[in-house]
Amino acid sequence: MRKISYALTFIAVVISLIFVHWLVVKSPKIIGRFQIITTYGLNKVCELKLYDDSGHQISGYDCRKFPLRVQDGCEKENSGFCAAWTSAGYALELSIGFAALSLFTILIGVSTGSRRRRIWKAVAGMVALHATFGIVAFGVVTDVNRTGAYPSLEYAKPGIAYGFNTFAWVFSVIVAAAVVITGISAEKGHKWAAGNRAYRRIDG
Image (cartoon, rainbow, N blue to C red; front, side):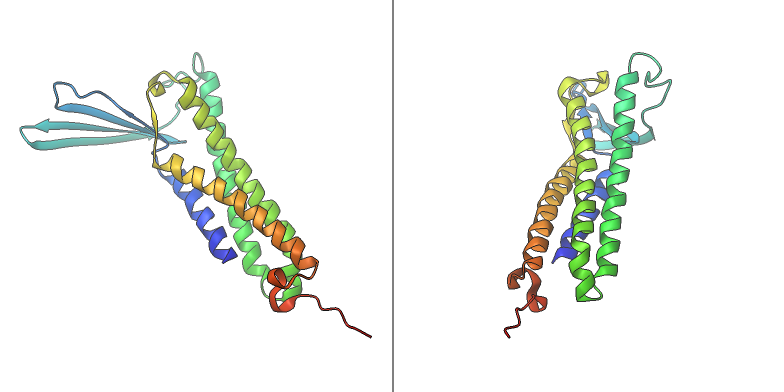
């Protein structure tokens, strides 16, 4: 069950990095036909152009790296935003790294009962760091969305990647807490935590 929990959080945070849909901006329809939907990811932005011509929908989809130093004003008026947004991308990559390390530790450490007892602290620490960096990315994007720090994001709405990231860090906090509680209880000899490997007192 624990391995499944770690895998779920790892998958969720990977999806949140891959998907562009962190923030979504939809332009008003022009004469009821033409609309632009812009999706912002932590490392690229994509633009979907929709045109409804007499019942036949025509679309165009273009993506580019984001933010760009010159095009997005990172050297001038938007320098603070660009630094924060780029940092959020790095934070999410670190989050993925710690999630992968926790999975690797579990796969290596479950081979014997003694190792299983020893690794819970390391796993809890890595899952906590995984959650922490996910929260950093979440906080940056939420602040940008709330304050409109970047002009084009003034009317943005959270997208699917934002949701996956939120799920990942919330679930990771719960998992880390559960690992700590279970680990401490197992060390104290509680059978519900240690299972068949619970410590038993030998009466003389």
